[in-house]
Image (tube, one colour):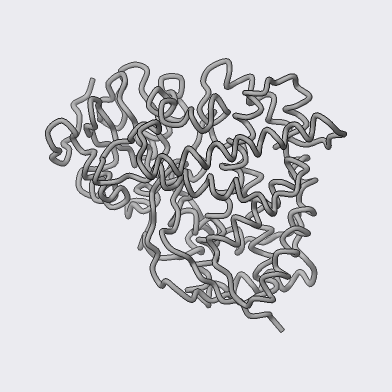
Length: 429
């Protein structure tokens, strides 16, 4: 095997865990800038490898994916929340679950959701217009959860506070903390863990009622009906519903939050996107050609990937980009660091949607949805929804970012704003 790369100095016993917990985004960005796109690190009682090299990431997520699993680390930390749902299941169980769920995300099915997405968005915009401004961190998750409920669960989730509270508790629970640079087991009665366990218990009760309501009546041809009618047991239905309720609305809401924040601070870019939308002279639809809208979303997800890192565990020894990966090592494929590397992006911290007009970068220089066989099953759904929502918003409103001018971010399971993101809305004439 090749020699491993130099690494930044770590601390005894805990290695680089403290530096990562203190500033996860800054740590990975600085480490990649100084040591390259494949760096051996150490964590508590285990090796780790940080990757921001597209070829190395492609090997881990795609071409040699059989050697990299979700692993015991993620299962231990997430099974109390997600059980054996699609996000963390492995092997034949994962394949069986994906085959069962995949039809809900076929292109034809997603096309059938588009009109409902636009109608649902329009109702939210009416409420926003009465206020003149929104906190994007509240308004956009409410919108995407409403869409998710309508098209995948046949349910009205507008008042489903259990889901939003659980999402907030998950972000808090899994945010690195320099005071404890490792995940404290959720049974330890810290204030953070107590909030988390209460939120998960309320969410479990909510999804049980949701499944029971579908069993007792006529079901639509949606994901919830597919799960109930497939013969899946209560535990599997619970695991999948929680997985999709959380992952299915939060990441899209974050992508829209960042897109509107950036367009609200770049009025010239916003005007260019709005011009192509106004040319439609009607609400947006699935088949519309909206390249500027698409590029704005793509660039927002480059700068602020809703999922900032994809983790894997090596099954056997490997080598990627000149870096040894020992069996059992935790592999961190960092979207945040990769998306901001000057090697692939000129002026990488600038919001420049036009950079995507002629994209000749390596495939895994940009991977907001992961990649390989375990690429996010909802990728197409999320992109269609983000495009239709953003086009609907900018068709009706001029958006201005009120505060803050810069975002303070929390790198947890998702990349979330630490504070409110206030957007001022002015009706277009």
